[in-house]
Length: 318
Image (cartoon, rainbow, N blue to C red; front, side, top):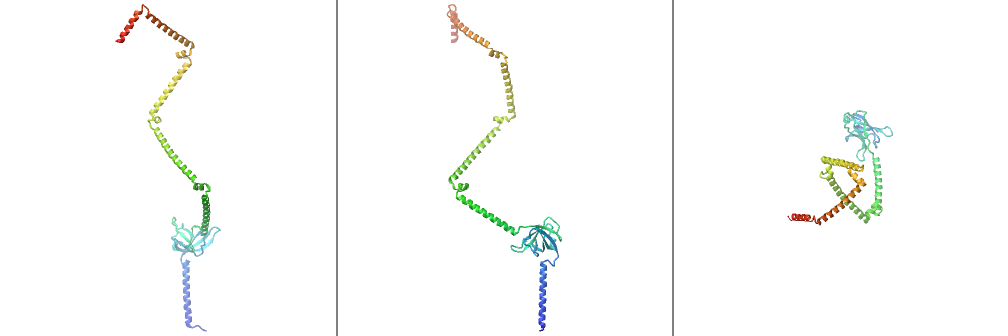
């Protein structure tokens, strides 16, 4: 059965509309993948791309500026990511810019973020390799959180164990907390330490006062600091040394038998003669007194002595 003209027209319109939709879809897809824009290729090397895929977006300062062209494994620890960047945007990216891999939101696709550089004034060119920043992956963060959680559990268990021991009066801390006698002794010890500290402070203050007094020139120690007083003391010491030398010399002369004093003190015969002479003098003096007394009673001298006594009595009255 032959198709009618109306059906042929409808089929032609449908094909034309479908073709237009197909062309528009290709345009949008190509525009999204930068197929129709002038682009340059730059690269960055990472240790871990964290699930980045071909065709994911590349952002510069939060703006989509290109897509991931290719992901190449360089070796077991390095991965090269080639990116297509719009040429007009590339004129704003400096060579010291840094690339990092992040996520588009909390659960979105992985993207490449390009952080602007500050030091360099030269812009990137086609084929350049920019710096990269390897951020901590989600798996590593989860491992760290898991390890931290396990450590927190161990710490909590230990704290519970320590608390139970303290409550059961085990260990030094438990005894200190629960033993009232030991607590009172500790308080008394602290009080004694406080009193001792105060006494020590007073002693130090007194010691400082004594030291300050020593610096005063009115004191003996302070006077020593005065140059004039020091010279006088020095002269006194020198004179004492000279006097000491003279005394030692005199004593030496006495010991060596020089001088009358040594002769008198060391000659035993002379000493005996002096003792005998003194005894004779005493005896002669006694006899002389007796003779004078006898003369007073003598007939010839009695009048003389009476006149002497009368003269003394008159002089005493006057």
